[in-house]
Length: 359
Image 1 (cartoon, rainbow, N blue to C red):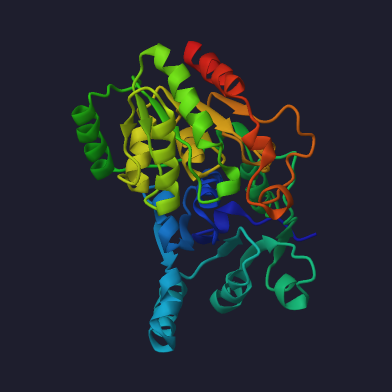
Image 2 (cartoon, one colour):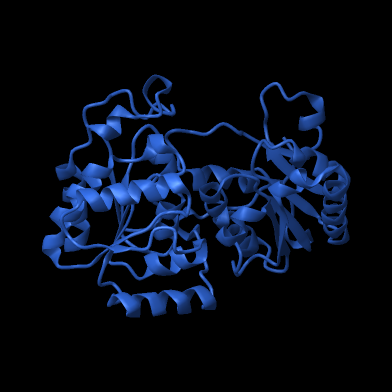
């Protein structure tokens, strides 16, 4: 077993998380936990450019470096120049420690090129000697259906001897001044008061995670008796906007439709002001939890113990009649449609909303 890394010896560290938005946001406690252990250490992050809003402004991150997935579309020359520029910036930081939080192959290459004194990465099945000898410390990579992803991410720090306090492992998300100002203006425009509306985000980039539009519409009708405005949001993508349009068509009550109108920082600022957030297993659900808003999270094939709301008042709603979930599949038999969601009763989701609204 590798010996522990002395926190006092750390001047600069790099944490790499090359995944999707929700995954990147749930890595936030790694930075704050490492900073508590080594307060003198400057901690940088390396992520994909499109996920930068999940970590930008985090008080424990010194520098945010990003890989633009569009580099590969610009041709070999421009991509090579961009990659070289990034590597040069990282080398100038002279890291003592690199923490790799996924099985992305770039992590092993970067450790060898940056040559930190210590490095920690996940054990990777069938990866071979190149991968495993790239790191001075290793931790188990496989997810655990009985443990939350935040807790699993922190295994990387446990592997180097850092004490982890899960009670203090909060997911930090900073909307920023501009996002706050725009949302305040939008709320004034639509007559919305802080903690005086319900925020519904029914869409996901993955259709198999979505609750049917007609059921979301029925939920809107049932929630209307609370006399709280209902605000609908989604990403700008056409399929998500189509889902919100179908929700509006199914509902018989007025809603404030902000679908496609907010960037990620603005979405965080909006959901922070909501009385309640209702959504599926998606990045906006994790964002709402990070902002401390009570969350009703609707789960289908994905595991709620791994991906449920973290450190906020919440109710997870999942099928009580499908023993096959969580199956982790993209719909039943590859259909992209999850029966555990299409049959999920409106009354079950409404009961969860009522519970949190009454709290």
